[in-house]
Length: 167
Ligand code: ATP
Ligand code: MG
Image 1 (cartoon, protein in one colour):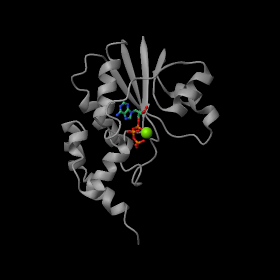
Image 2 (cartoon, helix red, strand yellow):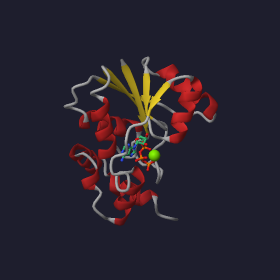
Image 3 (cartoon, helix red, strand yellow):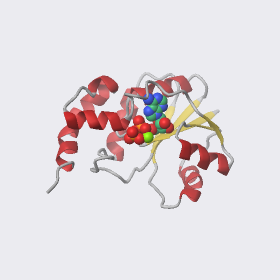
Image 4 (cartoon, helix red, strand yellow):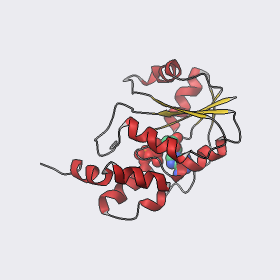
Protein backbone atom coordinates (compact mmCIF):
# COMPACT_ATOMS: atom_id res chain seq x y z
CA UNK A 1 0.00 0.00 0.00
CA UNK A 2 1.33 3.41 -1.04
CA UNK A 3 0.33 6.67 0.69
CA UNK A 4 0.55 10.23 -0.61
CA UNK A 5 1.22 13.35 1.48
CA UNK A 6 1.42 16.88 0.08
CA UNK A 7 2.43 20.27 1.42
CA UNK A 8 4.38 23.37 0.49
CA UNK A 9 6.84 22.79 3.35
CA UNK A 10 7.82 26.48 3.64
CA UNK A 11 9.63 25.28 5.72
CA UNK A 12 9.35 21.59 6.68
CA UNK A 13 8.57 21.45 10.43
CA UNK A 14 7.96 19.10 13.39
CA UNK A 15 4.21 18.91 12.62
CA UNK A 16 4.96 17.44 9.19
CA UNK A 17 7.57 15.14 10.74
CA UNK A 18 5.14 13.85 13.35
CA UNK A 19 2.44 13.09 10.75
CA UNK A 20 4.89 11.33 8.44
CA UNK A 21 6.22 9.18 11.30
CA UNK A 22 2.64 8.12 12.09
CA UNK A 23 1.84 7.42 8.41
CA UNK A 24 4.96 5.30 8.08
CA UNK A 25 3.35 2.66 10.34
CA UNK A 26 0.31 2.39 8.09
CA UNK A 27 1.72 2.10 4.57
CA UNK A 28 4.54 0.28 2.73
CA UNK A 29 5.77 3.35 0.84
CA UNK A 30 5.19 7.10 1.09
CA UNK A 31 5.14 9.67 -1.69
CA UNK A 32 5.74 13.22 -0.50
CA UNK A 33 4.61 15.89 -2.94
CA UNK A 34 6.26 19.30 -2.68
CA UNK A 35 3.52 21.68 -3.78
CA UNK A 36 3.92 25.10 -5.43
CA UNK A 37 7.26 23.73 -6.61
CA UNK A 38 7.86 26.61 -9.02
CA UNK A 39 7.67 29.16 -6.18
CA UNK A 40 10.57 30.60 -4.19
CA UNK A 41 11.80 33.96 -2.94
CA UNK A 42 8.31 35.11 -1.90
CA UNK A 43 7.50 36.03 1.70
CA UNK A 44 4.97 33.19 1.89
CA UNK A 45 7.10 30.81 -0.24
CA UNK A 46 10.73 31.61 0.51
CA UNK A 47 12.46 28.31 -0.27
CA UNK A 48 13.06 26.58 -3.61
CA UNK A 49 11.71 23.11 -4.36
CA UNK A 50 15.26 21.76 -4.18
CA UNK A 51 15.86 23.31 -0.77
CA UNK A 52 12.57 21.88 0.51
CA UNK A 53 13.37 18.43 -0.90
CA UNK A 54 16.70 18.55 0.96
CA UNK A 55 14.92 19.49 4.24
CA UNK A 56 12.48 16.58 3.89
CA UNK A 57 14.97 13.95 2.74
CA UNK A 58 17.48 14.69 5.52
CA UNK A 59 14.81 14.91 8.23
CA UNK A 60 13.45 11.48 7.27
CA UNK A 61 16.89 9.86 7.13
CA UNK A 62 15.96 7.34 9.84
CA UNK A 63 12.38 6.64 8.71
CA UNK A 64 11.77 2.90 8.47
CA UNK A 65 9.42 3.26 5.50
CA UNK A 66 10.76 3.91 1.95
CA UNK A 67 9.72 7.30 0.56
CA UNK A 68 9.91 9.40 -2.62
CA UNK A 69 9.92 13.21 -2.67
CA UNK A 70 8.52 14.71 -5.88
CA UNK A 71 8.01 18.36 -6.89
CA UNK A 72 4.51 19.37 -8.01
CA UNK A 73 4.00 22.72 -9.77
CA UNK A 74 0.72 24.61 -9.41
CA UNK A 75 -2.01 24.52 -12.02
CA UNK A 76 -4.36 27.48 -12.29
CA UNK A 77 -7.42 25.21 -12.31
CA UNK A 78 -8.37 23.53 -9.03
CA UNK A 79 -10.83 21.20 -10.76
CA UNK A 80 -7.91 19.53 -12.57
CA UNK A 81 -5.43 19.57 -9.70
CA UNK A 82 -5.90 16.00 -8.35
CA UNK A 83 -5.50 14.58 -11.87
CA UNK A 84 -2.44 16.81 -12.35
CA UNK A 85 -0.86 15.41 -9.16
CA UNK A 86 -1.60 11.82 -10.19
CA UNK A 87 -0.11 12.42 -13.63
CA UNK A 88 3.30 13.04 -12.06
CA UNK A 89 3.34 10.73 -9.03
CA UNK A 90 4.01 7.05 -8.54
CA UNK A 91 0.60 5.39 -8.07
CA UNK A 92 -0.92 5.64 -4.56
CA UNK A 93 -3.90 4.13 -2.71
CA UNK A 94 -4.59 6.74 -0.06
CA UNK A 95 -4.03 10.45 0.49
CA UNK A 96 -3.20 11.75 3.98
CA UNK A 97 -4.27 15.38 4.32
CA UNK A 98 -6.09 17.68 6.72
CA UNK A 99 -6.10 20.59 4.27
CA UNK A 100 -9.80 21.14 3.39
CA UNK A 101 -9.20 21.98 -0.28
CA UNK A 102 -6.83 19.03 -0.80
CA UNK A 103 -9.36 16.72 0.88
CA UNK A 104 -12.20 17.97 -1.32
CA UNK A 105 -10.29 17.82 -4.62
CA UNK A 106 -9.08 14.24 -4.05
CA UNK A 107 -12.47 13.01 -2.78
CA UNK A 108 -14.26 14.44 -5.83
CA UNK A 109 -11.70 12.73 -8.02
CA UNK A 110 -12.46 9.42 -6.27
CA UNK A 111 -9.36 8.91 -4.12
CA UNK A 112 -9.55 7.69 -0.52
CA UNK A 113 -8.51 10.47 1.91
CA UNK A 114 -7.54 10.10 5.57
CA UNK A 115 -7.12 13.21 7.75
CA UNK A 116 -4.39 12.86 10.40
CA UNK A 117 -4.61 14.65 13.76
CA UNK A 118 -2.89 18.03 13.93
CA UNK A 119 0.29 18.20 16.01
CA UNK A 120 0.41 21.39 18.17
CA UNK A 121 -1.07 23.40 15.31
CA UNK A 122 -0.99 26.70 17.22
CA UNK A 123 2.78 26.90 16.96
CA UNK A 124 3.65 24.25 14.38
CA UNK A 125 2.72 25.97 11.13
CA UNK A 126 4.82 27.38 8.32
CA UNK A 127 3.12 30.74 8.82
CA UNK A 128 4.17 30.92 12.49
CA UNK A 129 7.72 29.81 11.68
CA UNK A 130 8.14 32.46 8.95
CA UNK A 131 6.72 35.07 11.36
CA UNK A 132 9.24 34.09 14.03
CA UNK A 133 12.11 34.22 11.50
CA UNK A 134 11.16 37.80 10.60
CA UNK A 135 10.70 38.83 14.26
CA UNK A 136 13.99 37.23 15.31
CA UNK A 137 12.12 34.87 17.69
CA UNK A 138 12.81 31.20 18.41
CA UNK A 139 11.75 29.32 15.25
CA UNK A 140 14.47 26.69 15.59
CA UNK A 141 12.50 24.74 18.24
CA UNK A 142 9.69 24.11 15.71
CA UNK A 143 11.75 22.33 13.03
CA UNK A 144 14.06 19.28 12.93
CA UNK A 145 17.70 20.21 13.68
CA UNK A 146 18.79 19.30 10.14
CA UNK A 147 16.34 21.93 8.85
CA UNK A 148 18.01 24.54 11.08
CA UNK A 149 21.35 23.56 9.48
CA UNK A 150 19.99 23.82 5.92
CA UNK A 151 18.34 27.21 6.52
CA UNK A 152 21.61 28.43 7.97
CA UNK A 153 23.57 27.08 4.98
CA UNK A 154 21.35 28.82 2.41
CA UNK A 155 21.00 32.06 4.39
CA UNK A 156 17.27 31.50 4.65
CA UNK A 157 16.50 34.03 7.37
CA UNK A 158 18.50 36.75 5.63
CA UNK A 159 16.69 35.94 2.36
CA UNK A 160 13.28 36.12 4.01
CA UNK A 161 13.98 39.41 5.75
CA UNK A 162 15.48 40.93 2.56
CA UNK A 163 12.46 40.04 0.37
CA UNK A 164 10.03 41.26 3.03
CA UNK A 165 11.39 44.84 2.78
CA UNK A 166 9.71 47.61 0.84
CA UNK A 167 11.62 49.69 -1.72
P1 ATP B 1 1.56 27.34 5.98
O1 ATP B 1 1.23 28.03 7.27
O2 ATP B 1 2.65 28.01 5.19
O3 ATP B 1 0.37 26.99 5.14
P2 ATP B 1 1.63 24.65 7.04
O4 ATP B 1 2.22 24.48 8.40
O5 ATP B 1 0.14 24.64 6.91
O6 ATP B 1 2.27 25.96 6.40
P3 ATP B 1 1.81 23.12 4.65
O7 ATP B 1 3.04 22.86 3.87
O8 ATP B 1 0.80 24.07 4.14
O9 ATP B 1 2.28 23.57 6.12
O10 ATP B 1 1.09 21.79 5.05
C1 ATP B 1 1.31 20.55 4.52
C2 ATP B 1 0.39 19.60 5.20
O11 ATP B 1 0.79 19.45 6.56
C3 ATP B 1 -1.07 20.10 5.24
O12 ATP B 1 -1.92 19.00 4.96
C4 ATP B 1 -1.23 20.59 6.65
O13 ATP B 1 -2.57 20.47 7.09
C5 ATP B 1 -0.30 19.64 7.42
N1 ATP B 1 0.17 20.22 8.66
C6 ATP B 1 0.66 21.46 8.84
N2 ATP B 1 0.97 21.69 10.13
C7 ATP B 1 0.66 20.55 10.79
C8 ATP B 1 0.72 20.15 12.16
N3 ATP B 1 1.17 20.98 13.10
N4 ATP B 1 0.30 18.91 12.48
C9 ATP B 1 -0.17 18.10 11.53
N5 ATP B 1 -0.26 18.39 10.22
C10 ATP B 1 0.15 19.61 9.85
MG1 MG C 1 -0.89 25.25 5.10
